[in-house]
Image (cartoon, rainbow, N blue to C red; front, side, top):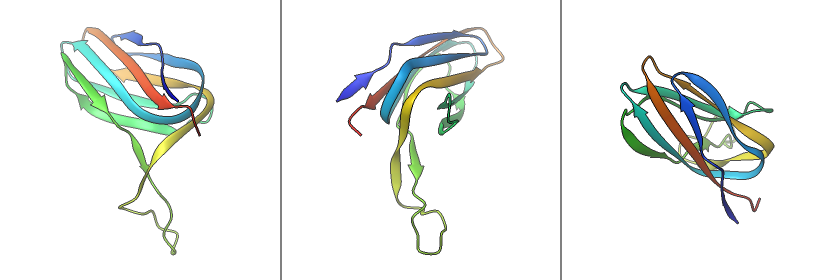
Length: 117
């Protein structure tokens, strides 16, 4: 079932958390940057630290959608595949969002995920 986390608004450069006990695969992230400079966004699982997305230069004063995927590690020789991507799983944890911006303004984040694992 498709789920949407309550949005969080981060002021300036700060850290906040989305959801409470998210369980599912990340489908999309909506980022609304109302800042006067581009920003860097890093999102991970709070407990596991699983990387979800790292983006430098998120456009200021814009709404941007991200569809994070992870490369599969699935080749016979143990090397990471370069053409196969997987949705990122999160299991019973919040999503940690860190916004780095050398400017003023707010960034609002929402995560859409599929809770049917």
